[in-house]
Image 1 (cartoon, rainbow, N blue to C red):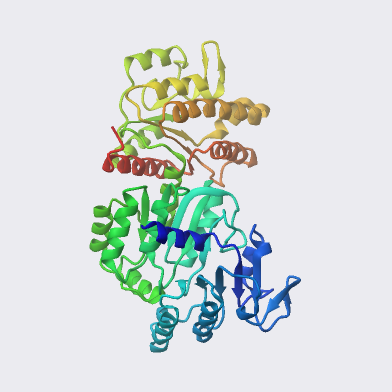
Image 2 (image 1 turned 90 degrees about the vertical axis):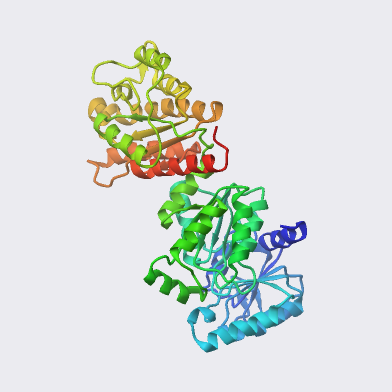
Length: 485
């Protein structure tokens, strides 16, 4: 992307003053969202039905606003959109997000005609996002798409053809400890399209990983080039919506774009180096791993578990995902033999050492020391905790369970930080939040562990298979880009 094009898009994501055209004090999502962010004092309302909104002057037309406006959010009747865009051009506004639907996505001749009219009006005079989309969420500038959007800045960029997918990321982000650099829902892509945003986020220093949801494209060659450009610079994790016959039909009616065959998209992602996943949950889980973890230097993983039986299942899951669970070196086995109680344990990889969770302090070392020993093994590239049975600790410790869990958590974090921050090896955690755990104390203990690891920047997942699959995505990306040894 040229510097001038990058600067143009950067100004769109970071406007100084915003006009909401079609603003309402009742059910207008854009108004409610922006009035909760840092940009609220630089928002201007436009709607001839109101004299004021939220105690502020409401203008009959964008032409009546005296101050310069950088960015317009348009939520008026579809038939009025071309006229309003023309007024934005007259006013000197550089970009507009069109929330309104009723264009080519309807499949109706009048919808296609209206979109063509919009393109003709806007051509070369103003940049358009949409129509039929949620627009931009950028915590740094204060642009938001829903009132619940966090103002915390992060390193995840999201490009979504669907407004609801973009919206859901802001909700899922809270459950996965994800924070965002930029999120854009671009809808029908009358002007700015997926390739524009891919190239922009590829060059954006604030964005570490890109999540992509796409249904179709009007320019396959341009998409290929932009996707390859982005994937060469940072991880791009992609979901293609509409791979089945029925999904394809729905996708065509959603944005009015051609979708292509599953084989075509699979080939496109593979040749470009993007990581294709199958659904939204997997998209979020994979992005969480890239957002929080260093890349593993190989596929060799150590599993630390509190269950021998489950560790066998987890080893099989690793093999299915192309991950190895190798034996520890003799040096590691010797060191562990002096730290881990022998009775009821399996000193190997997986490390089934449930007594160490009860005996936090030992004469010759702590739980944190044990984790460090495992992390230092030359045969190990990454570490996964499988910790789903807090109720056993509760039974063993009785009334001291929560205090004991605090100690367990801190020891695990001490070793995990050493593994990630000093040795550069990823650490992922699987912890069950099953609502059918025996009582509130069980859930409280598991939630405590989850929250503590997330607050320290570790990815946490609710089940073993999800955790291992996320780690496998990290390794496969590292291997295909040559970033693994």
